[in-house]
Length: 98
Image 1: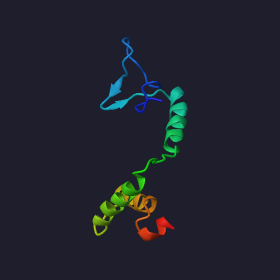
Image 2: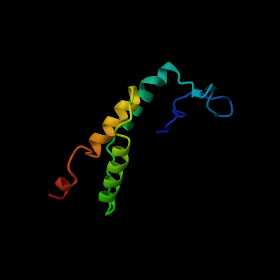
Image 3: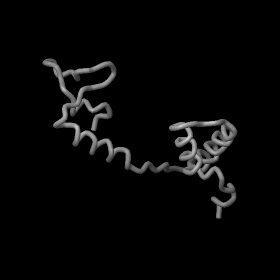
Image 4: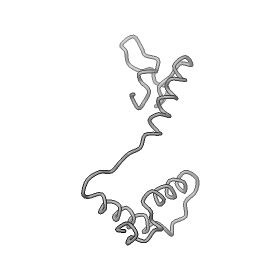
């Protein structure tokens, strides 16, 4: 699936997406399929593989802890909380070795 929905959008006579500002125009008859594909993309699970993943997790914890005292609102707050949960910021680092 194309991230910007160009396979679902209206196109001009040259096959280029018709834009309204920075948004492609998706006709109603394509909208349901487009939204289904977006939902499928959002539900995909990403797995970090390889020997460096422990170091990546430790680095992300360190970065997230540096911003712990910042105040966040709305999407920023949700995103920060999600990242802290995923990288287990509140858990003791020694627990991951057990």
